[in-house]
Image (cartoon, rainbow, N blue to C red; front, side, top):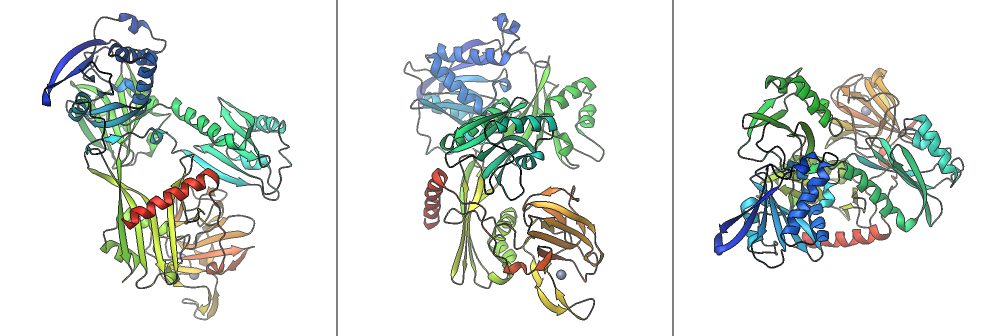
Length: 636
Ligand SMILES: [Zn+2]
């Protein structure tokens, strides 16, 4: 056994009195193992529940009612799964006889979660153990002036980054079957789904213009809804292995769907907002993944048995694809008392995969750093070009790239941006509770002042937590096609007659040329299906995307295609499809970009791009509120 504790299922409550500043006493209830309460150990049926029950009992022991103890523990569970508590974890409660307004858990000997009552609800906060002791024992309830603490927003804990929402609108020739085909791979299942739909509407006679949405997780259909009439929707949700179909009222749709999605996420209760391995007593060994290596080889070097490694990999499988770990990335292997405790892999600046040994099994968690957001404002006046001028004001590179990508929906960089054009950008920086910078967050707002025009965009999350950018009237800034499917490139040749640089005679130039360095990513200008991705005569390496029955876009002279890009593959707007090169009849690295309307090249800068989404109802009201708040921040 690695730990002295056989399990923290056995709770021995020792109440230690701890003298803190101001001579206020705080009780510290330690969660320790003991040979008592063996009955818990025998209760194998639902160890986690009996575990929760133990904590509820502990809270009832210090004066909580059962109902409020349960409420409080549920809030704690959103911040960290109780299984990660170790023998050095303990509960911190105030010593006074008065009603408890807050208590805390020291989780890993460094970080603590404070659970604080707010009227009838509880809220969770992350801080360090010493501050937690002080706040709990001194019964401090107003945290607004306290620096080193973060409120844990449980809405951020949804494990929904793999959930995607796709708006649908029935066009001529569309059938429900065809729209669902890609996301329901099992044909029998799809057939049964269509049969069920028949009870409510005729799936083959859906009116043109009918709107709805597909909700997918890892590209599998989780739910969908379509409009039946102005008041009702047909809602299908995955229930176990089959879909359940219901007719629902328009005003109930969002909450029903939200419940469904929250439930799906809850089953994956693997989010922890506390770093499991943030304990000074743990020994952490960094291992850089070399060519030909995987987690397996790394663990094997620490003489971890094959069977154990198999268990570890099995625990990870439902939540993370270990094949995604690239050469050069670091895998931390953690030891405690010279015994193997687990491993940690940083997925992004915010998320890590953490696997920890619990009893004789392994559990995988996604450690999602809790952060504080601070917004920062930058102003760029064009003197040279956007890239250099944004460097001058220290705009982070990631923000610059994102900004250009977003603005390319509304701006033609070549024509619209001139000397003295002014950019205003409001973006987030993320900090941990100690105030250490983690990473840049989202762009919240941007404004470009053109000659007699102002282009604005606001970030807004709808009631599903889906974030998108809108103009100041709540219209999505995403257009059907991007005007510039490349980052910050220079338009080197427009559409029209010109002397061909290689052929030497006057020839119609049927596209736009963007000069850029070899290897610069090229984006899909809109959602669509790849019609062609191969070598195509003078075009060199060439990609053509069919967006709808009218429009196609083509990308030529590429140096290479992005992984997985081939004929008949579906791509999303903004997805990297290939890289700038100089293949085919080309004098130097550039992207030759064409827009085809009914298979005929047209001048891309002449197209009127139609907006695709407009907020309405509650979402629009909330958008206006947030928009006005943003404007206030800017004026301050
Ligand atoms: Zn060209």
